[in-house]
Image (cartoon, rainbow, N blue to C red):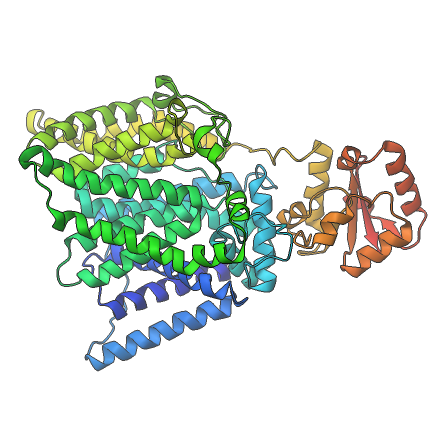
Length: 615
């Protein structure tokens, strides 16, 4: 794990730093630079993967070469200009010390929750394990004929490519790679949010908003899926758009970075990309609103930078990824693989949200039991601070104080609420996934409300400032952070495809075998072997097809098949009852038990889970 983490940090920081030097972008704050360089590196990883994954060269060495080449080019450019590098640790001010503390606590809670059970949660992460394993072996996101792996092309594969490349460095545990780096990517969203919020709102409001976002129950879980990477990339995209809008001397540099960051969001997950696109459009509208209200005019110079970044980012994503994908695959196949259909927009049962319409209590309360992929709720203290923030933002919108920021906060809140309650409308877009985009303005407004409340106390109740701060922190910890922590550290189930506890226990026991031991399930999906740190080869069509006749095939046929694909172990469990009769299964077990080419591995078996060693 240490090798993978070191590689991740070094390569991403190197690519990000080099890109900034080559483009001539500047940032005064040391810690902002460090985190944004890291995020820039991840953006460039996505861009490079669009090419490397297509040609089958997505491996750790290729990205290392790219990082070294970019560093070399940056050093050569700066040397010609007489610039010398002064390597030093970033200087941490109080705000950044607190943000880093929040980030580390968030990472600890999420990683602890993810590692608190010996399996992957729900169904999606098992398929991500298989996709990442495929990438680690072949360096490609192009699948064999038949598209057996859901999370590779024509789906957006960049999350799985990142995990697969890291797995190449230390292939001792796919499960650990998925759990830790997913928790890390989620947690990185916290300081990256602060980078943007500080630029837009100022340090004090940004700090309170960052704390609010970290403890907000509806802001992301440690569920393993590609939204983790896509959502993290939203904040550097917003940061670059902000810098592009404000910068003078380095405007072009930030414009380029903004375009590529926006493209990375569009390329990483379809639903998040669509929601982010809406968020960006609302942002542009919010910048126009104050001028329309006060002078009934549009100041195009304010609107052009975000519009250009959004349009250029969309174009880049089409050229680098979506265009080639639609050229390679039928349109209906691309839409199906990415779960895109007319039902998604109009049918309340057309997505995984189940057509829910949320009540006021669903927003105010912070439940201690919630959905794994998308928890809900704010917490009462958070809701109160948000209401204070809304009132203050409305007042600011009508005055000359921070009008643009106030409009952004209010319109983003309206956008998030409309999206989350989409099942009330004729057209919607995965309403339950809108919670994470609702969380952003809620956190901002709660932070803004906290600052306004403290400003009132500082002005009218001298000497009460520290007590007020402590009360706000305690209230948020008790009513939001605590229930969120309960959800994120509870034991999440391994998914709906498992048929019994004995089967789960059997697969957990297989973790005692050496890492990446090839294991074939006579009746169960190979992605579950990958998720338990074994090798299942779920991408081989014959392997999947063979399950339909594995029990009824002859002993010679079984042995020939297992040897052909190099399986060292095979499993027969209760899932076989879904496709075969008990008599057929018992006959197969008796036959295998009396065949010298197979040996029952007693230490990896139980009454309902039989593991056979292939001799």
